[in-house]
Amino acid sequence: MNYLVVRSTVLLCGFSAAIAAHAQAWPNKPIKFVVPFTAGGANDLMARAAAEGASRVLGQPVVIDNKPGAGGSLGAELVAKSPPDGYTFLISAAGVISNHMIKKSMPFKESDLVPVAMIALSPSIIVAPPNAIYSNLKEFVEASKKSPDGFNFATAGTGSTPHFVAEILKSKYGAKLQVVPYKSGNESATAIMAGQVQATSEASIVSLPKIAGGKMKALANTWTTRISSYSQLSTATEQGFPEVKIAHWAGVHAPAGVAPEIMDKVAAAVDAAMKTPEIANRLKASGIEPIGGTRASFNQFVGEEKARLAAVVKVSGMKED
Image (cartoon, rainbow, N blue to C red; front, side, top):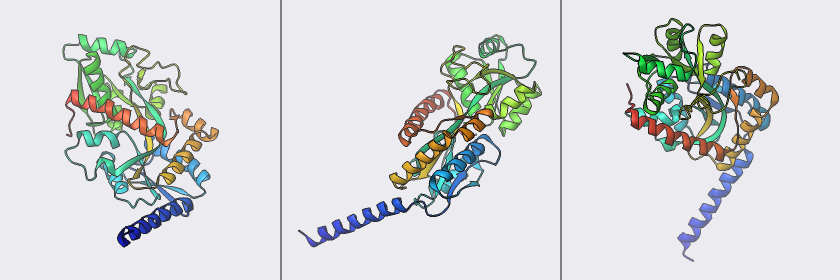
């Protein structure tokens, strides 16, 4: 056999053995979960629950590092460009999929981040001012069609979850809506409570306290199942709007190149965390649904979300502001 072939084979075997040994020894130091949003939001709360449970399973601290900015792209870029050693992960959200569809340029390739695990989701709730004459999604859509100028629908900016909700209602069900972009979900929620717009959608963890306090009126839950802590609210699907399927979800993505064995261990640890009664019950009480699952199931979810959101972007012509 040619010497170069033998040497190449030996080097390849040695490299593969080194990767395997590294995966077996992992983790031997703290792991970092980068949250691309500020502390206290839905993504951050889901990240902290996952970190708490995963650290127990993995036997190492899992620390949260908040890196907000650029609609989640700043933290995503940091992780995408991190060494693929299994010690830095991104707490991902829908933006990890949609930003590449609507932004003019991105500082990293979509393939630089790899799906690892689903954590949980906070269903989006379509809400209206408390004195609105419509009491559910069907009445809202019909009222918008009859309004001479249509209704104003607040969003947290281009590509945000409420923006997708509005575009789906427009393109699939003929709702007559004017999209009004605000800088954040807090601003759009304030506009609703002040009666400045006719509707918006916001994560259940944010909306439920305001609904309970009479500051907002709930019209529909945009996920496929009812919210555990607010089961009286029907889903959009139950009301005849099956295409309205979207939530504020949190998952784990890794830099491309992390050993599959390590990613499988992270997925298993997060799944165990979401099945821990203490953690699961705490999340459900705040309007968050724990999910977990395998790496394969999260890859499937991401693929389906990508196809579905891409169709909405194409129909609506959604582009970066």
